[in-house]
Image (tube, rainbow, N blue to C red):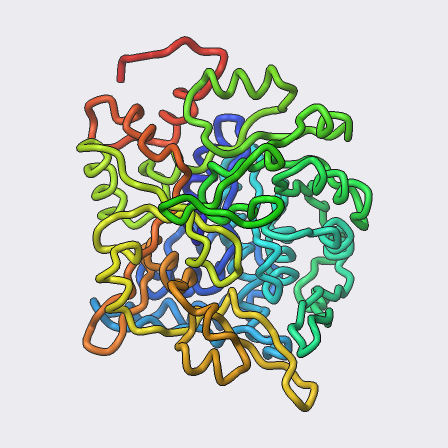
Length: 465
């Protein structure tokens, strides 16, 4: 769920009661160092970091970011944006951050914990996954692309072997694929690590079939994500058409053939619009192993969403539904992206137009070829003049939002700019956001365990809280 909304506290709570708790790995390096600047390193964090195999690295990062607290409205110290030739220190922080997030989520129980990454975000992938594997992550879940190389990469990382992460590079004639090397030798313990199970996020049985046949290792299952899910969605198959509000129109070709999916012989979980136990029961009756749920958990107390923002949206939902748009322009990736139309967020036109464009996190930048054959990086959400100067098409910048800064703000880590102005949040949720109200039942908040109880198909409704 975005950046840090599905954090270690939520994942731990879910895993403790027999479900799969999943942490978000997107932007984990800057999430980690910004938490350190705000909160320091408490006993729980120091306890898990005590198991990291390179104590020197732990000491260096804590000394740099956790010894002095950030003052109110003071800018965060931000890590350099990643490139194909970033120094070793950049990969060090990624490994340590992913290790810490997974280790905290797994501490004190024997439940299962996974990590979710976007295939589209390529540069941090290998280092993030190794940190997670080092901490004993049980599952890796990846979508927003075609991650055929991930099973083999996980196998090599678990053996402590060097890997090459593919990097797509835009060229004048199309694109090429380079690689970014990552060698875990300096972090690895003496014995091999357990390889996690790999789950691919798909929007069609066609993609699932391709992944099952073409991946360089086992794909252990699929999350079947429908267009009603939050975050990034797959575009409609065929020609893009939109309704009067600009939402993409999905048709018969976008319906998932569950029978064909079942013939692959792998478990699958249905995602998108799951808000009731009847829907869970229906999914299982159709052959699914279970469901993946995002929106209901995003607004629970254990969620990483910034508290006042979460409370504000819940209060608004009690008064009536909030609009959820599927924007075809918000994300610089080109994928449709769900946006909650809420005041004081980037979805507010006044807020959007008053925000000055910045690109200082850079996770969604694309690599492109310079005239001399070397690489540059650009993003359609960066300052327009800069993007155009780098060869980007001006039309791609229209109504594009900096998801990196916006989602970091949603998790409570928004950067402060000159004059003390903070980056505004952007909130993403599934189409069924209004169904969150059913969990409140007269209260102002609810917990992750309330969500699980609400959805369990083997329980009758319980109206006592």
